[in-house]
Length: 529
Image (cartoon, rainbow, N blue to C red):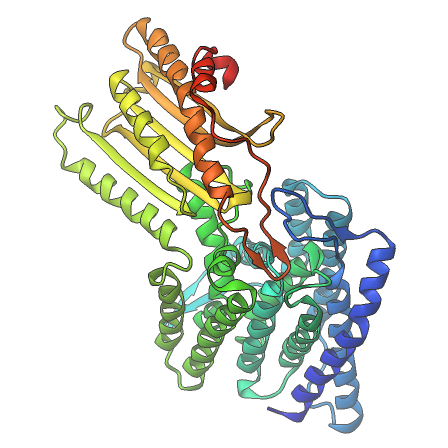
């Protein structure tokens, strides 16, 4: 490693070690803290936010100091700044400000996206545009699509790092290794400003990791994770050529892990019919932490990032572009085949594809009679089949065309999805469609919590369909005790305590007695639901 790169890495690291405690104290004094709750934020005590400010400041200290050292002692070997550099720094600061506002006064998803689009548009307008995509040695010219594809790439990078920031040290570790990998790619033809910026950010994140590792005492917050994602997205373009016009497979391969997490989340929610904005605890960091613990999670993530980054660099050094693809396949394949992450989404996708292909070989005569049945435990070990199988039996006895259940119990790390439907559903104009929430009692006072939904489709051939649906829903009420029993069984399992995260057991009533169940059966189904 060149001494200038080592200098910027060291200066940024030391700056972070000095600045993070000061930013942490200031954040606590200003009330910028992340408070735990019983659903999503499950750490034990409030944790300071604003770590992104310390990372950004440390990055600037390391970057500017290295440039000044070069100007005074190394004869301007790093070259000069062009206008795109000033736009990059100011845009990163704008992303940081938007994130700080969101950390302090939460914004809606569409509001954040609007600000992100405006900032990204300013960067693309300044000249950072992907005009070609280089895949396996084949260059694809984007033409008029260059501007929107560049914006899409940067938005994906920003939100991919933001989504992966859900466990102590996760985004920091990934960002540190990814930036170092991009730095090596940038410096393969000589030391330049892009490489210095990459290593400055890597050093700042390495210093921040000392306070963000489990158990964390400060978080990056949306401000930090979005800012890192923004830098990574731009640097992935700049690390390929000085002209910033080509996005190659190597820098994309380095980003394989956060991109895979985002893709899996979108795929999981789309295939189960959930909203794209719904929260769950089935991200990469959640599953790895549950399986390997906090430190084990970071070790696995670091190892996989090193594999993709190393093979990406070797692929460019020896002009073997296929090596970067091998690194991605190796890393993602390891996660899927060890069932650490991505296995449920892959199974969902494969099952959907098989049923879709099978529908082409089904005779029109039996399309409405033949049923497709699939069920997937997306997460956890709850015995949800004991809830689902009676629903299928009810659907059969009431001549329904389709029934689908989707459960998402974030605080228990449980997810379940199943469907049963005809190969060919009735025409839209001849369907009665209904979606009802499913509940569980969560406290001794009898209050209820929505844990998922049940969708049903009945063929609307006559007015009798109304009575069929009413009878179906009324009998669904009998499943409430079984749902409560499955959740009670899960809550009796030992709580998982992994570093800064603690999965508490919400208070839940005991399994209903026979008389309580009979009383429940007599209640009207619609009022219960």
